[in-house]
Image 1 (cartoon, rainbow, N blue to C red):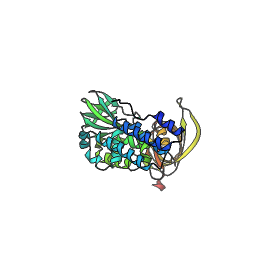
Image 2: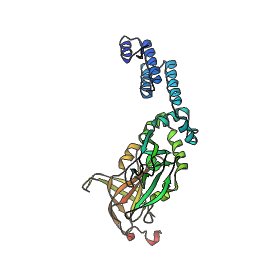
Image 3: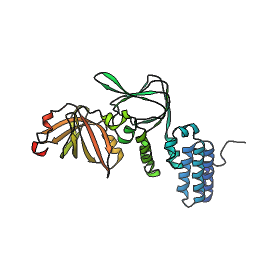
Image 4: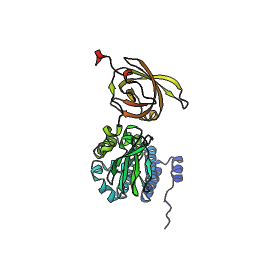
Amino acid sequence: MSDRPTETEADVDRYLQEGNTEAAVKALYALVIEHVRGGAFSKAEALRDRLYAVDAMALTEIIKAGEAIEEAKRAGMSRDLLVAWKDLYRTLSSEEANALYYAQKSETFEPGQRIFRQGETHSRMYFIEEGQGSLSFRRENRDILLCTIVPGDVVNADAFFSNTICTFCFSAVSALKAHALDQDVLTAWEKSFPALEGKLLGYCSTKRKKAESPETANRRQAARRKHSTAVYFRLMNASGEAFGNTFNGSLIDISTHGLSYSLKIAARSNARMLLGRALELKVPLPATDAVVSGTVVAVHHLPFDDYSVHVRFHKVIREDSIKLPASAQ
């Protein structure tokens, strides 16, 4: 018996040219089922979308095609993996579980391999399945161990959800197996699975190790002072020269090592583009109008399309330049 599908996409095109929509619908449905049986889920989903475009009223075929895809995906899931992450998957609908499971990429790392370094932009999140790893923080040319990573841990959730430069190093201690999730899936899920990001964030928040908590991960070197004033900034090029338009945000707090300010940003992708960029900033402070430069190390989402932008200065500024006047303290 031939493995060749009974219908092809060329047949679909021919039926449509002939004006035979009913035959095109049947051929597309047959192709969906053929690709589902072969495990080609992405192709099956593309054909299902085309089926909807050809005839949005072919509800029987559209629904049955969708159900066939979802059922085959569920059947193809690793039982062991579902048990290992049962506390996460039990919060998800069948469609959300499929979306999360098939978005992950299996990765293995050799003992001693550095997966990412402190200060890098690395937004991939890791679900640890086998082996051991370590989180460490580099200061004054020495590595400080924060904690050991074991199966069941989730690593790098902050950078995955919040657009932040890595605040620690992640290395494999033994042979390490993990399931990785790229940040791009968040955009893909926005319309199809709008609740999935929140559920995943909630789970990761409960799994976050103390070493990755905001209090520990920031490891601030100087106390921050709250100020309420505008911040004016421009992008800087590779030569350290400011260029382009001047934008403004609202200062949240400032220290001798950095500052944060709020800014309205319409799209998540635009927020990501700020990460790692060098800025020239003008901050009208009580003591002086400070003009400084720094690098964006984090961009966190706030309600109503506002974001907090966190900048580390290229040079430490004077303590007396950021003090509030006595009357304002």
